Image (cartoon, rainbow, N blue to C red; front, side, top):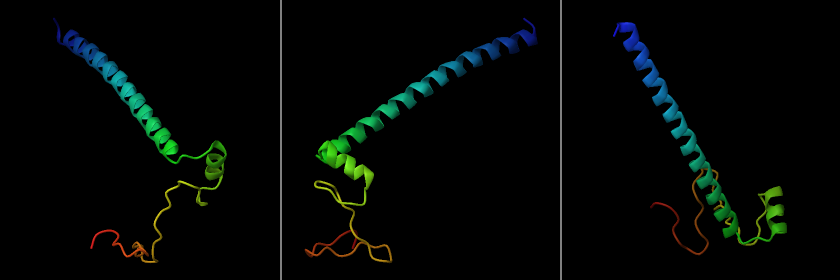
Amino acid sequence: MSRLEKIEKELLKAREKAAEWQAKVRDLEKQKQEEENVMIVQAVRSLKLTPAELLSFLDNPNISTPGQLVPKPTAPHGKALPCPCGERAGPP
């Protein structure tokens, strides 16, 4: 077997492996997308909103709706403001 034939044979093997890896990447990307979709559906369902409330929320996410988790207010310096109930928030 000549040197050229060996190179061609190795090139063919490398192309086959590349095709296998590309298929694996596509499959993993699909799995990742499906898992992200499941997480989104779970998050939306956890809000327990009616379809009309969900539509309203998506149209204007700055308005608090029943069951919505509202972010903690922050001071101008970016640190969380103390809880009015007296609990400590965040690290000491």
